[in-house]
Length: 294
Image (cartoon, rainbow, N blue to C red; front, top):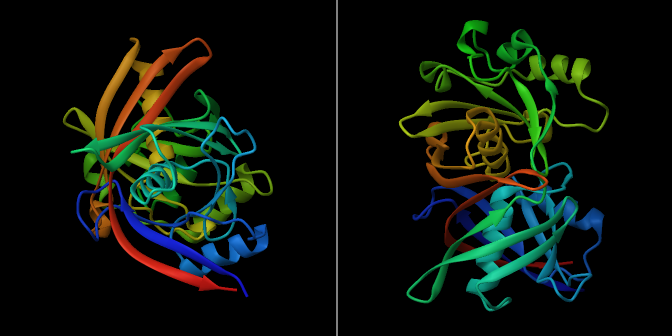
């Protein structure tokens, strides 16, 4: 039998029982892919991470991310939370870390207070890519909203990625709280627009002051609603900069309000030689520790 320690934290929050929960296995050598997937499904968080030695010794670690049903090439809150865990519990040193992931290299800058890590900011591994528009009626049905609740002045529902793709949808402020995922509509739209093995994760948002408030539904992947989705927020930041113009865009996002898990994310997008890049950051709070015996 082998023992594997894990820790859980709440990400993008300053208080326990807020933000997005994450489980981290800081020493995952010896776990195969099937077991990692089974553990992620058993823990039943939106994502679980498994930390392995890096393939390149210049990097901090290789990080594998699993949701309830599949491995993710990249995700936001798992990277922020994993960096915090490794630094907080002595598994990594220095103020900057670099993770090897399916989507590429993820650069991390720790957020510290009084010399101790309290969170992290990560750079998404890829520049913005736009992967096509989706039909307004189909998206509205997925969200149980009338079609006129979806705003089109800045952009139509569009699939976008900075490492993993989401459908980004701007809605009227009053529609944000009214949205409810319709599983049958998701299945219909996925059958019509998504290649086998693809994703249909809808990130809807409304402008609120100088920032945004958002929700994310991915029921086909087992996440009915996500309290904080760093990778989707980063993709949106890059998209908004591409629309608004300028060199840099900074703002804050709030997500998870409707779930009772209010989350706060700091977003930044900038123009780089290879396209528009984005970062997302926030704070973390320790929750539980445990051990798996296999």
